[in-house]
Image (cartoon, rainbow, N blue to C red; front, side, top):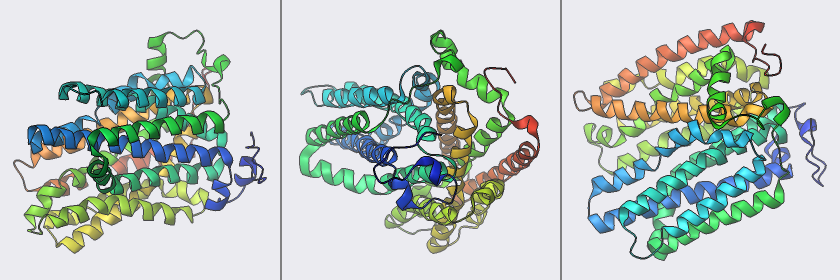
Length: 427
């Protein structure tokens, strides 16, 4: 295993032999700089969404169009994850991250051109989000070369916590920046965050080149690169089950999409929406902090039960409890969903190093599809049933699917046949 070479003397290999502390994690120079770049990217993504949403509302006075603009910014992750993430296995992971960050800075700057129509600005926002997929794939593919064992699990947890915190703080902070600097000023700040992120990665990370001899990336065609990740996951029982466990989030994300009508159903007022929307991200952060204290082997054993609990705990929502009970239930669901950091770490560790980018792209696409479908379908069904009942039904379905995934995971962990196939031998 490679070491970081950090002057503090903390190496990946040393940390992987024991439970990792946050102090030891951030002592790894490459991870520290990658995390800072991630903070900037999350801030940039959220700022672009908020700025353009505000701009759309100011020009059209349509709340519906503003909400649609914000929602559209998530759609490209589905396409980008499936089609573009494979570039992380064809070029240096550092190069992919730097190029995509610089490209996003240029595209965001183009959004400030005076007189540009709204449709053009929305289209540019879609391009920004498309470029996020190869960046994320390259980052996730590089992490196992920087961190190992328990350090990888905790590192991915920190990345996820940062994203969750960005969601909680993004609306308020983004709106404040837009109010202070105006839409164009906020977009220029956004472009600057991507440039600083690119600089941090270029100067602070090794190249992290994919193993071309193993992946055959030098001779793969574009279509083979796109489909390689899907073929890899389809051929591995363990990867399929891990992806299924991750996609169970499509069920317990439903409350997020129905928070507004749910607040109306319990007659809790507009202020309650903020509490309901914050419950899951706050719970996730708390859950990750708690799960970090669990022994690494025990975390793997808890993967199935926590996946089931993430949906099961939402079931009482069907009985339309008080706001306080709802917030507690949704926070608990978020806490149980912290198992995702274990799922992610196990997933990327199972994948051959040369195909990590493609496999991560599959995961990005699958997760976006599951979560988007969950929110869209629940919203349609909520036209016929009460929001509380829809969330309850999603909880039932999520519990059943997670229980099936738990059983499948138990079988793969007890059987050597579930091991990931080796690209070099076909086994």
